[in-house]
Image (cartoon, rainbow, N blue to C red; front, top):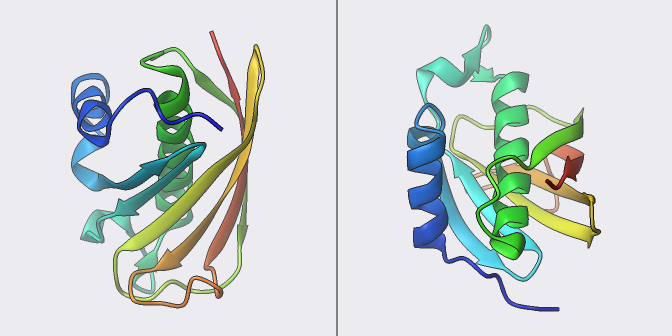
Amino acid sequence: MTAPVLTIDELTAFLTREFPQVAPHVVIEALGPMTATMRLRRHEQHLRPGGTLSGPSMALLADVTAYIALLGMIGEKALAVTTNLSLNFMRKPADADLICEGRLLKIGKRLAVGDAVMYSEGGDPSQPVCHATFTYAIP
């Protein structure tokens, strides 16, 4: 397994430049070979009625985590796009930031496939609030 070709600082700058609407809401916590860990900062706009994190906010976190894991391995390819994203909501998140650990299972010539697990900050990673699978098209 090869090391990422971009650093956390380079990917953060890329997100800020290319996706300014998303960058303030997420933080790249870790980057490794075929992996990325990201944080969604808990904010009022990410809540649904009942005061819990919304499904669309969890989808955003899963998708951005997949994107960062992929770009970490293949470089700045802004036009890599999601072709599939599936989420399984497993339990109610705590009133805290959400952590997402993503991993790429395979990077091919045209597609990359992986999965991600999300849990509340301070929570037990073995008790995820959401599991996602994803496929990305590589330009």
